[in-house]
Amino acid sequence: MKKLVWVLVFAACVDVQGQSSGCYQIDTIPFAPDSFNVGVPLIIGGDAYSPIIPIGFNFCLYDSVYSQLVISSNDYLCFTIQYANGFSPWAIPSSIDLLFDAVLGPWQDLTPGLNNLYYFTSGTAPFRKFVVSYYDVPLFGCPTTHVTNQIILYETTNIIEIHTQSRPYISFSSQCNSHLYGLGNRSGTDDLFYENFPITNKSFRFIPLCASCVTSVNEIYQNQIINLFPNPATNEIKVQSLKFKVEAVEIYDVVGGKVYSLVDSRLLSVAQQLSTNHYQLTLNISNLPSGMYFVRIRTENGSVTKKLIKQ
Image 1 (cartoon, rainbow, N blue to C red):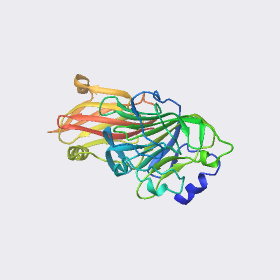
Image 2 (image 1 turned 180 degrees about the horizontal axis):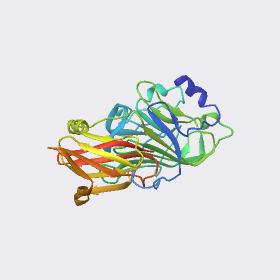
Image 3 (image 1 turned 135 degrees about the vertical axis):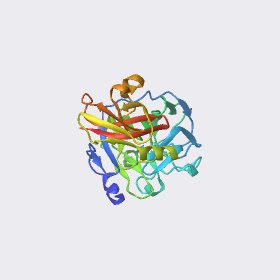
Image 4 (image 1 turned 60 degrees about the vertical axis):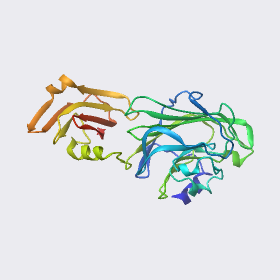
């Protein structure tokens, strides 16, 4: 795929709606970023990585779990923390092989200064988000042209969003126009694309299809004893626990918004004890719009989150 990337960087606009490499589905979504100039200010030089920064939760990219990362001055996040405080490559796309485990938002040659970079973690577990903003940052070699972008990582869903408010076209400089959106991993099966200029108020969402990391021994066990079916589903789903009583079921959309909740006494109306320590709940989801959801199931022994497709 990397030979294809070389062509894309200098080609016409690529339609990414529904594009998938098999591991991530890439969608164009409505432009709805967080505020760009809020959070912890970050001051780093040109072509540089930040110190190690905690995400605030465990995040899965492809098949690896991370709790820390480094932020590049060149508009991307890198989970290879050995790069901390070091040189960040700018040559696009010839140095793509150096960007293991990275989120490119897009990767471009920037010269940030004061009041240009911010980051923060917000929300409540298990659906927090980590936000990095590049606010009004000058392009290297074209200092009067500024760009504004934002990258968001979502807990539990492991979804990634990239929001570009402004990325102008520079008619006199091919270097200033070089850029690359997407994800990089160690196996070379990168999800990368180029977007035509000018880019204004445009957002992309990366939905994991094969990145299914588990973060604890208890979560592995809970996955084994709790079943969710049918999946995909249309009107009803069944939650089945093979050992522990279910205490709560919550359904979240792809960005962590709660759309369904069933707890305490309300569970009694849908719960059925099939045998000793064997419980089943039938839930009506007919009112949910079609799409991808995440079902958080809490038992007396712990919690587990399962992906659901509503048709």
